[in-house]
Every structure is written in C-alpha cells, then in structure tokens.
Image (cartoon, rainbow, N blue to C red; front, side, top):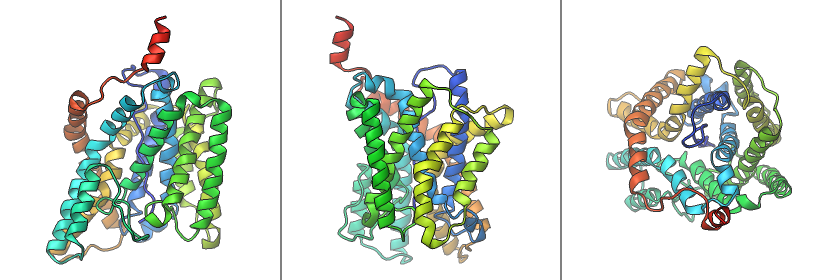
Length: 381
C-alpha cells in the first residue's frame, strides 16, 4: 500500500456566494478528482494501466498542498486574527467524518467476513481494536513497525496527517508572519529530504508505522507551502495555465518513469517544487463550459472516491471470490472499481454525507465558529 491523496475542503469560503474568484478555483477541484481516481491504481491490481502512472502516490502531496491553500482561503483570515481553535477543529471533523465512517464500517465488515470465511487470517481482537480506534479517528497502535496505521481502511492515514496539520495551523496561525512561515516551510523541506532519502526504498512513505515520519514530513511541508501560495496569490497576480495544460501537467508528474536509484530524488523534487508549482499555476485558471461542469462533479465526488475505494475493492474481491471468479489484475478490474467508487461517492455524498454533516453541525458540541473573546473584546472597545 502506498500513499493516498488527502481530501481538501470546499473551494468557497463558508457562507460566501460564488464569485469570479471562486470560479477560478474550479480547476483545482477538477485536478483533485483526477488525482483521487489515479490513487485507485495504487491499491487495485491494474496490470499495464497502473504501470502508466508509476508516481501516482505523489497525488497525496498535491492534496496536502491543495488542502493548505484551501484552508487558508476559507479560514485563514479568521484564524490569523484570533479565531478559536476548537470550533475550527469541530468544523474540520464534521467535514471529514461521515464518509470516513462509511469507509471504516464497510472495511470492518469486509475484513470480518473474510476472517469468518477463512479467506483471511487475523485476530478478532485486532479487528475490534482497529474498529474502536477508527471510530475515534485514531490509528491502530502496533508494536510491529510494518503495521498499517489504519488496517481497516488504509487511505485514512493521510486524513490523520491532514487533521494534525489543520490543528497545528489553528494553534499557530496568529503567529505566522512571513518570516515565521518561511522558516516553517524551510524546516519542512529539510525534513522531506532527510526522511525521503532515509526511506528511499519505499515509494510514497507514510502509511506504515515504520515510515510514519516521512508522512508527517510531507504534510508539514506541503500544507504550509499551500498556505504560502494562497498568501502570495492575495498579494500578486499569479501566472496561470490553461485547464488542459494543468491536467496534462498533473498526469505527467505522476507518469514520469524513473529508475529505482533516482526515484527518491525525483519524489523530493515533485514534493518540493512540482506539486506546489502546479497548485499555484492552476489557482487563477479558468475552466470554460463543459470543463467547468466536469471539474465541479470531480470535486464533489473526489473525497468519497478517495475514502471509499479500498473497502469497495475489498468488497468486489470478496464477492467475486465467493462466486468462484478471482478478479484478474488488469485494467478491467481497476476500471470496475473506478466506476463503483464514483457512483458510490456520488450517491453517498448526496444522500448521506450532506445530511449527516448538517445533523452533526446541529448536535455536535463546541458550536460557535468565530473569533476569540479577546479579539471580539478589542473590536468592540
């Protein structure tokens, strides 16, 4: 299992009407969807199709950079002027939790059925422990360095890292002057270089306990680089590229064939330079006509595709095995999962995720997104 892409928040500030500026972010939504579907090839046997995108695990870095950009857009002004920590964390948890929980439940059911039918060996205690930890959004503690953080839905590792990055940003946002932000990014770059070279044998490290340090290094750099990109965009008019060029660039970055001895070097370059550059150049790009509609749909289903595709693949594999048809490692299998994940994401987003988030927004403790009492007191004299 290699790296997955983390989802980002809506590209429109909460409560704000759609504007020309928001419309320009549609391309980032579309790229998010393209990256989410590319990730499927990292987890589903796809034969030659997967070989066409050997660097697909780098999608996670695109998502982390995009997440920093989007969080700065939607919440940066509030946090940097004293916005409260817990209401922000509450908003982020409500955004991510319903579909995450759906993936966890499906993954737990499939793994449990595989154990009951003898298809998979495993400890029932580990299954229960993993499910209970997962309900709390926590990784499964393990003394085995080769163990997954989230064995019941492996892609969730990057969600954990994103939440940690969100929480750190909420705590330090008011102190992030340009000099401080530049220092944080430089430190993150050093950590990326050191950890990626230390785990050079792993493509896209971060999903196992044995290389969890590289995962944290990647999100540390990527997320704050995204924040810096958004700040730069507010100060200057960034150059832009056509939507089709942005899509081609993303595909090219993850499609470059690299010799094993140079893979870590290329990955470092992609993380530190190529993915941030792609987000920056795409932020002001227009998406006309049908391209805009496609980007909108891709943005809406991208998170569901990301967080549901592994349990869906496991379910398909188990069902076909029961029917005596072991799924082949070819493009047809991967395309079947792509289709199922896309449809499931669209349906669950519309009929489960949105209603669940509305309900959680009403009942979850800690309501009151806004500025701190100190800031409000100063504002009112």
